[in-house]
Image 1: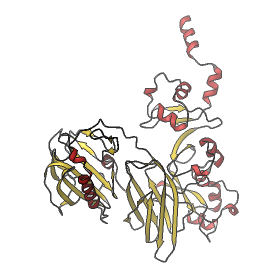
Image 2: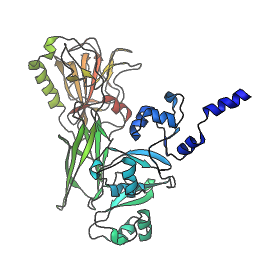
Image 3: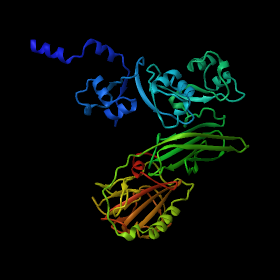
Image 4: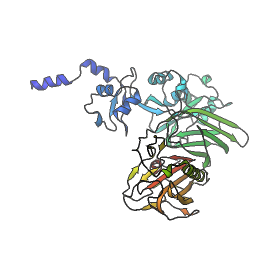
Length: 463
């Protein structure tokens, strides 16, 4: 008994230490979180996170676990992280998340509003008292519109509108000011409202954030009347298609070798009666953290630029069009049978014949692990078949809206140009033609002229 008492006294932190940690805010562990990623998210060391939470095995943290977060004196409750959306400002974030601008600045150690570029990560406290059956979206006070009219249009009294936004008097609301409105989730807008936009713009959304090398980006624009749309992300011009009567969408691939940092997002729209709205804001482009493959050795002819460049240009030309019809539905399916096995992943940096790591893997390689069958991952129109030096026997399918699939190194091509194919239809057989070190299927997905991570299309429905 004496030994047990001594042991408990030894392992229990002193009362002063307990008092210091009990008042700390907490973070709820999410899927894919690790001690290192959580520490990096909040700007603290993994060692400090482990010490404060008295973790004996940091590798055993589990989803739903509450971890105390040091370094935020005076902050209480649960912390979360969000990506800064389009058009956000300190004022709009303050009203949307119902916290003061000063608290946002202090939590995130901001020294300038310019640090609020799209896709950057902000630490915010969760408002536990918010009704979970409601959501908060932003609207803008239009020129010529009174605060009372805005309140009525939002289904609120003027007093409720001012109270939700912590505004003492309606005289403080200026035209195009962002205003937070709580609504039932079922009636929330299809796309996020853009502060400062005119009344014919219901909202603009860019996701997923932050923008990442090798990923597919979606832009959605909600309007109350038809518009002509144009825009760009960095050097990539956006191609908009009609999603429904009030929503336009654009899909854009981000090149796997794109320079990380800030890129400009721009958008312009013109109504039929000549009204114009333009918007631009820096967007964070983050690295994809792709690893290096072991050095590869291939036939030198398949690296000869006099051969590879015309072939690359051919494929770029075939995949550059934007068919205004969306042929696919839902997520894509795997282009091979189960059990499937991936031999090389998209984005991996590559060296050929002792070159530098200036190449990257433009698709996913499936080995022969079940049979040789190759299937269409989604509906579309076959727009190319042929034999190429690097890609071997190749097939390209147009899925519509600027989305294409490429299938390289086949032993047999079982479709013809012009064929309409459906998801799961047999289109070829795995082979070893072209620049290969063994038989496999190389599957690519192109989005508006850029190769992207194909596996994302198996897991997520676009747009």
